Amino acid sequence: MFRVKAQLRGEQLESMELDETDQKILYLLKKETRTSLTHAEIADRIGVSSSTVSNRIQALKADGIVESINPQINYENAGVPYHMLFVCTVPIEQRKALAKEVIEVDGVVETRELLTGRRNLHVEVVSEEINTVELASEAIESLGISIEESDIFRRKNSQPLNYFIQDELDESER
Image 1 (cartoon, rainbow, N blue to C red):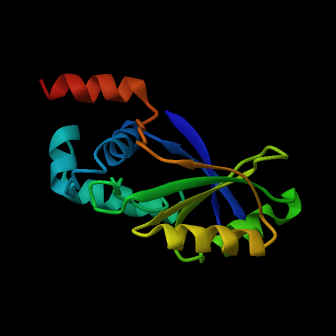
Image 2 (cartoon, rainbow, N blue to C red; image 1 turned 135 degrees about the vertical axis):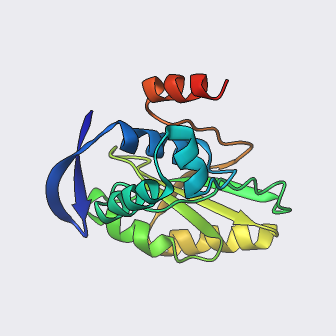
Image 3 (spheres, rainbow, N blue to C red; image 1 turned 90 degrees about the horizontal axis):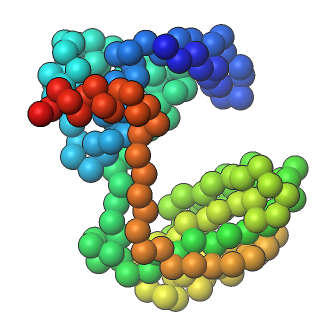
């Protein structure tokens, strides 16, 4: 059983325990982002009712553990040829505010704040046209954000955290 401390709107909440059902739900939500599993399908795979899955997901959202359920988009297959990562440096005391401000720039789809002193803000930009990428980079720099490096994305891979749950669920699918 995991114990997690959640934050809601910056306020620390009491820690809560994630039982095996919560862990399995989180694992499947992360693993199956491309297939859009229904609550009933999740329920069938983990051996609980669909109402239990619905209630658990609502509780995980309310506790700030599940922030959103987003599909993983392959921009190249979607016909969006420019998918860039800007590795930036911002003053640490301004990092959070600038991350919120830069997400509003046209073409920016995601930001990641890092704890390091340099290269502490990653900004992901997608566009059908190179001009939009250039305008986005200018807008990013106009906010006082220093772009240290830019790279073209090829592919992003991820996996759920809990390997024990993975083994248990993967075995049940055989």
